[in-house]
Length: 353
Image 1 (cartoon, rainbow, N blue to C red):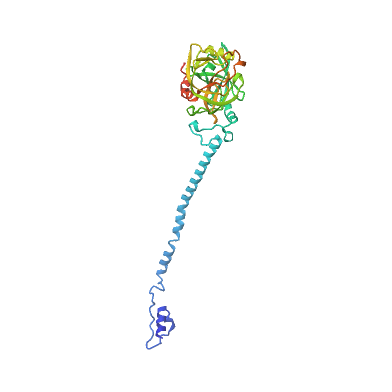
Image 2 (image 1 turned 90 degrees about the horizontal axis):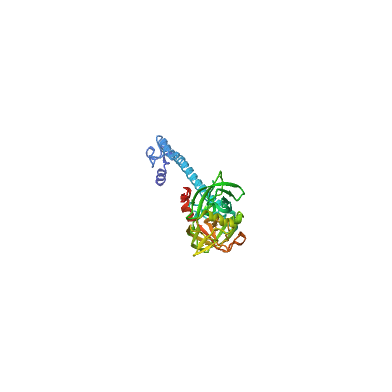
């Protein structure tokens, strides 16, 4: 019995198992082993409050995280769009890298046609024009390169020198009149501007310092008035000292006779007498076929960048007509870096003004 009572006392059920008259003395209810159990009534609301307080906290924290999560999601989407834009530009320009300010990393030719003559011709031909210049000495034909969408064109000085009127034909057959902006006879360069032109395809000017002997090139111009003629070859040599005439009337006469522009190289004169007024510049030599009328046209690398302005070619010394003045694979071009360095001077009227 003692063991039973002790067991019941420990369990807290003793008060309810035995009547008050049990044993020697009247039974006095025992105090429960755990004085806080059952809990007093005043404790229950507090307990409930403690149990309920953590509940709102997660709700509040979730609301706080909501805007942050949204901002993070927006940032991720913006980054994805930005990356997609860069890639889109990359594909649209056909370049292996996003087009930069420097043209050395730019490819004008679509990726699928990169490195092909056909791809270069297709991409650059819209930027090459035919120039017809009229003067008292007659009429001559040359070529030019569009460098702005509103019609600035680089050509050789000897193509337009002394001209009283200039007509330009673009690759799509449109004709414009043009005015001389500036000339630099010392570099055999000139800048002309088309009247009322817009939306033209400007060429990409490359970096002739990166050109190496053996590089493949394409030449585009209008030899003998054959607009948009494409030839190809390689860079044969660098820094050739080419001497050309600065005599206006002589240049017009030579081109009219079909003998090409007279020049001197290595102490020898080609295509006639250069006269007493001459200038010498460093040129790129190419075996791409150049003929009378190619002067002022473009020498282009296989990415479609202009690396030179074609300026002179060798033809048979006894040539008296265009039919016998064909190319023998000795052509020369003014490096495009020379052109770029002279642009501000030309736009200001040139060194001859």
